Length: 406
Length: 128
Image (tube, rainbow over all chains, first blue to last red; front, side):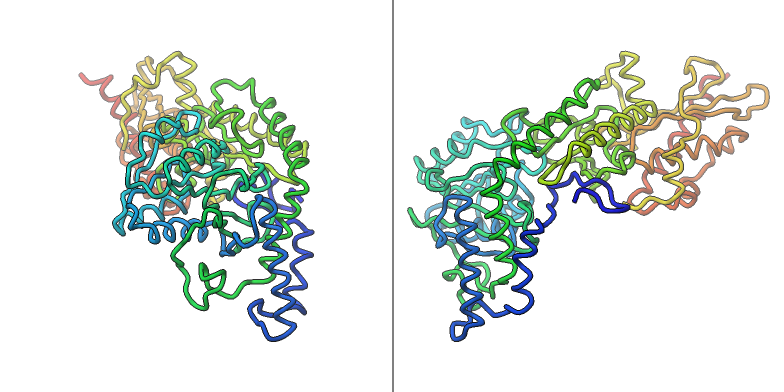
């Protein structure tokens, strides 16, 4: 599963995950013979499709301790984020117009918040600590009498840190503020029980948890009731919250993926923890190498490291047998380094020098050993090529240099 | 990101990696770029004082594959050239040779700046 001929070893599970073969098998019948529209109430084609969708809805709900009636199908976590934030802000705008979020959120949240600013809302973007975690005092200080919604992601997609959602939720309850949590990277990795976790809205993705791309869900709490203004109109599906014919095969896929995740989370996490340690141990004796994000308040599946004095894109070019991603500007369309790493207070050099490795269900020890070997070799080679490494070795303090930038 | 064969070649087999002693009279050193931008190039030339011809060159680069290739290529090209010929090197020639895509053109510009800076440094050392 981790490599096909001519393709590098996959260590970019944070970008997307392979669809579990068991999920594919579950989906196929709903593309072939059983193609009915789940909203067709008048015949068996529709009834069986509806039954499959409702079973899948329950499987999604069970992974997070929710009631199936609290699950709204969407096209993915990006749409869920849009629906949650725009839907809640617009519904509750008579209560206030202030929203709070964090600088390290996914673009799906940040760009939606920018759009809400354009629509007349006030948004505060909070800083995080060097370890990527939100400080509760910073959050408390940002709350205003007119704050109606706070959005904080469960697990960060770039650095893997886990925010203290129980504490943030308790604070929101106390202040009567809605809490939205983007859990796209969290399902199957972190135990979530919405019976006890005080979260009002939660975005869920399928393709980060071994399900197909193009489907997701939004958890919308019933007790106490949370209301949203729909963003997709046309038929009133999903209790009026999200219109559109449900893609039976996609819902079945996400349901099966979440069912498997519930049963196999513990073993997946145990394996990931061992592989995480193997990777860290293999690189720990390298000089000037830094882990980005809190060392333990994180998911094991994510390892984001900066290799000082080596630029990220050139490193990725060298480790061509490995598929990873970088926080380097060169690999994004702009020349700006990762905004998440900058929010940690990382210097531009360290943000340019980072590698994000994310492992998953089919990563093996051999994959990790290969990764360690190729990273060590290429870091050494690129440091030989690097004028910054040379200056560091000569004892020059790079922060004192006047650079002749072009 | 698909790299041209030539960029990959320079990355796998960089030419003239290393350093001269920058205190050496016959050496001109150019250091351009900034870590904040993700690109720093150090280019050095060793000049024959009698003929004014660049006899040898060395480079070290912190940057992406295209940046490494651009500076490696420059060290190959300037050997055997006079100082003025080397300073006349155009980034467009580098970009064309390496088939750089538009988003990587700035790497060739930086390499042009680097060789000009090395030539300037040598000339300053020998200004009468």
